[in-house]
Image (tube, rainbow, N blue to C red; front, top):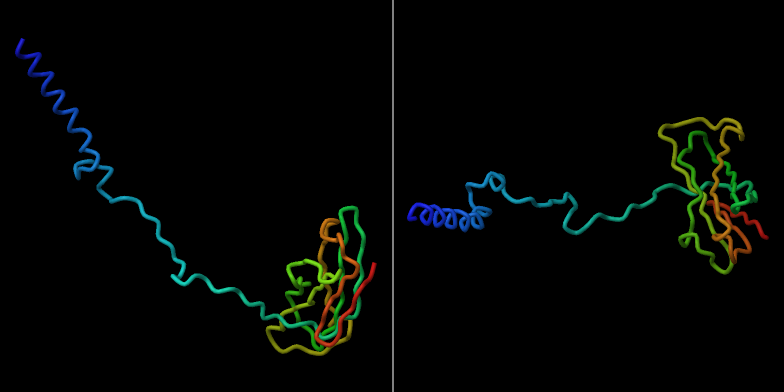
Length: 155
């Protein structure tokens, strides 16, 4: 009778110690410490990116091509020398109409190295942007700005 009582008492003591085993150094799950998340972001946060591309010197043509889903704005510009790249129609005011006008800036990045003048065809750049029917609601005109001029298309 004493042996089963002694065995059950030892079993109760061992099982009651299991609750503290979780935090014990004897537990292999605790050998490498707890998980933590570290970030490489600076304490003051990341700075905003600045688009250093220039406006195209001359916007020569703007056309709006209708599609079933909306429209495509296609703009053509002429640069002074060859080699301009990274061409884009950058939206002004987050593509929200200003007085019924969607305004885009025709931007491009300068050549990496000196390049020749060449013919006008070799200095022509094009860019486009797709607009949904929802984005076109309330828009009466689309304006594309360059450094020396701007072109607009009206509805």
